[in-house]
Length: 232
Image (cartoon, rainbow, N blue to C red; front, top):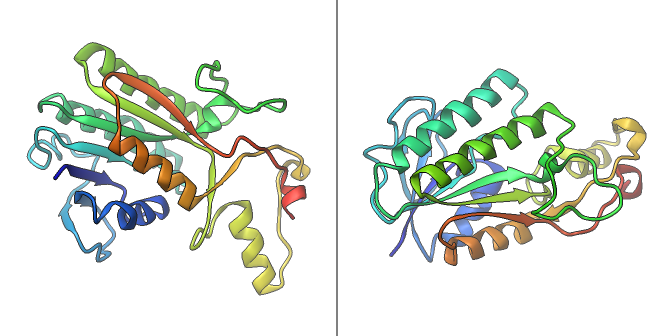
């Protein structure tokens, strides 16, 4: 049975992904601060520590990196994406037949108002979040080219679903229950692609099951765009 090393399993996407793949794979997760009972193998550590994965991953493993989401602290966000990513990659090149999946964001494309973005589009991030994600992707791409790592970058659109408390949809549902008003940015006229967590996880699982050799980029999104005003 293939071993999945899941980084970021306690997050929103990580929790849903774990429950989906648990019957099919042997899962091992890195936990830092959270003490969530994940009902599978866990090991403690900080991804910012050099060599943290050297003895925790084995030949033929699949590493799924969900770490690197913005939590309000941009300094930590940058460290986890760059330094954490470098630590993961340096550990991966010490093993044989490692496959690595990085969860990124369609925010690397910037604003595309007319048509859905495709994997071949030029990157044009307009937010610091998108810039950091695009630079992180380039780091992974360079390791794939130089060291021959099998790496797939998944660019997710804006994920919503049960237990997701942030984002326009989560905030809107919360405001309805609490009978409060909701704040929106840019007059609510910016376009965004949204995907339900179940669809996002299904896409990730398919890539885990059939990941190709070499370097690849895959968008997982709905292909449709809505404004916050339309959603409201």
